[in-house]
Image (cartoon, rainbow, N blue to C red):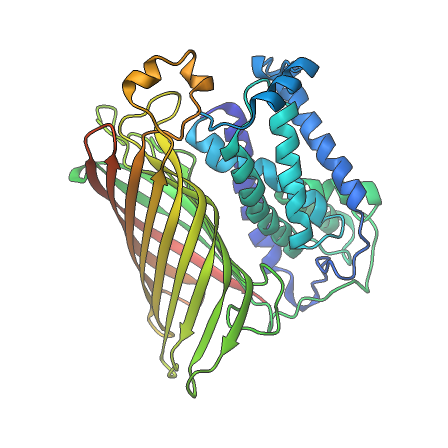
Length: 493
């Protein structure tokens, strides 16, 4: 992993930990600034900031990193327009995570200038579109456009909401400086806009919107533990490393009073602290865009709605002499229908169930053959997710999660066709190995209450993959990991 990516995620880890400490101190006096209905709109300023964002990143590539692909001219721009969009061969982390982070900057420029979620979406698209055509000499990329636009909207809205929890214009002095700093790390463009407009130091005691935590509950947990990853499904061939997991439940999924996009979302990110695995192994998000709640039977609560998803699972070779990578899976541009059901709760136990059926516009899965710069296939398809949780107020909870993904790679070529292409890395224009991949994850998790805030958590991930290839032998693989950790959970009040 390059230095730039490591630096980004060191900042993320630091800001999430600091934010948790700050949010815990907010109590009932929290004032925030996230109501786009009451904010003054600055659409042209948002568009100008997107140009500045692209210019700054291009300048870093061109003059600091001295990258050949950043040596653009009117001739390269014309060539990109004439050539049109292709499927590129960038690395998994670049395409499936760094590009969405790039897109989140475009999206945040619009959100922090008063635009709502839906009106901010075109900004992430246009920012990515202009980058692909104008800021690189390489052919513009279809997958970059999708992941930067929709993945950027997902991560951009989450970072905007997280920074909202930190910012408090009623504070002064060191407390205000600390909050502004953390808020800027979490949502850089928003922090820059607050500095430009003077909001970063302006003191207000009557703010635009007050968060009512009874309507918008926020629960955060931080887990520190050990991660045991099996090599090729062998129990006694494994790698252990420490991990840090950040989880947030934002809003009430069954509330009809909070109706804006992302008034409910569940977000988690897993960091590896050493070992052979990537710094960031997992980012998962499910967010409510629009929904309606019902009471089908007395005491029962149900919801049907439209949701956005973002999933990123990344791994590398477990041991030095390993023959294979355990898994790679992503769905950065995903929307679908969701159903949540809360069964009548007793004084001791409650039962939750959620099911999602999704259309994956763009995803990626590990491949066993394609090696032109990347070891994964791009594709589209569908996913089905089931979450069941049994919660005991006294003892803890048992979660049974099952995720199924099926992605189709329709644009692929035989080895002979690949060899006959001049510079296939840049100009083959392929999604990878033609075929389809079915990927199943079974994830049971047990949380045992140690106190009101502390829990012991034990969970496992069982991964099953079946890949069909049109030009190669089919491959079936499976492996697992086990996690044991200590979790600290708190809610904002």
